[in-house]
Length: 252
Length: 230
Image (cartoon, rainbow over all chains, first blue to last red; front, side, top):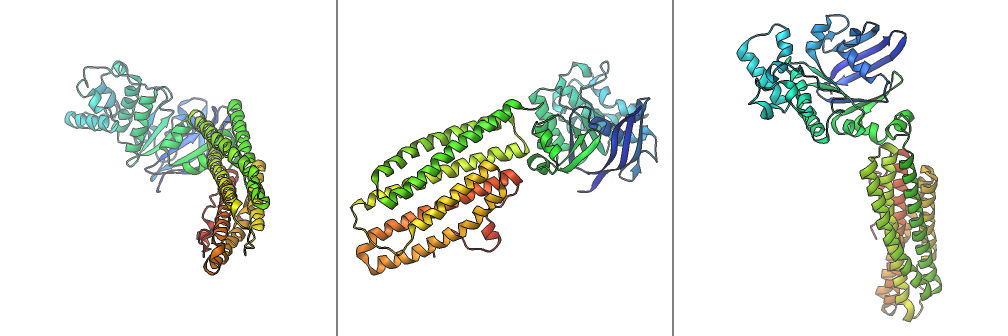
């Protein structure tokens, strides 16, 4: 496994709250990595540090190194450039409600000044195909709004929107927590299809989901990375007692 | 989110398996006693306990299946339930072996007694000790006790091989003793299987407690195949 994201000595704060403490890990490229842990443990803060969204909160700050390929995201560039290389999908699907399906997908590209009509058509189709939504919406691309789709379809639309800017990394913060089992299954299948092309980091409270989709899993507790190992090891025989207590439901 | 009900269910599963273990251990001890004193009434008790063992095997599997489906256990809990399912099957086979031995004892009722070159009581004592220790390791979640069971298996295998050699020689050279020798050979084989099941139980306890898969350690270290008779 090559390294997709290299994190060294990462610390993050909200005001005086030291939310992430000395995180060091290498997230493998072209694989899915799951982050688990109880609410408030720092896993969402961690993924928000991977695309510099953390600093959008006025009282938040972060120190340390996050390297994606040859790019040191806290040193070499502006946040906008980072977010072109790192797509993100959130807990609740958030399509732009007044925009058509088509415009939702290419919103990021248009924001970056991209307006080549034929190329946009191709990117929209490719992104919707990659997010397994094309067959369901191809006849209504410009007729229907993103908000008219079901919850599961909206989430896949958001994935298509993230893929349209051709990122290297896809961050998913509890992407299925608001979805029914069928839609969840489609997103999980999608993660499998996307893995060969993208480095995927998924935050989840669903232990079975982490076990199903990820090759590596990290367990966060109280702002620290307690254990990071193969998913198989974490869920069958974790090294740290705290990991075992959490995944077996003895605390959390 | 401490899963109190789930933990209670795991405790209940363990208790069910201990009842099963008690029945299987009692069955093999009774079968050995039936052989020692040639008492057919003890054989009847073994037959009756086999029915209870079979029923309990199904109940335990059902409880374990329900827990897997409903609770989706992880880590040590998952290893525990998988081990219980496998130990359950081994205990049922111990019950079957006890029944096989008691069937041989019934067969011997009308045979003249013979002084055969095989020490069945010593072999039985060792196999029963292995069962007892493997169950102790399960009750106490003690991997070290379980490992001591693995070390005992070679001795029973060696006894079984020696019994095979000496009893086939009896059958060749003293054909009038062939029925008795054949019975003794089958009892020896049943006891060797009991020892194998005790070994399996010990391996499952190690898997549960330590997460280590120590099965087939003999082939891995170039040791003898325990099932080879000669």
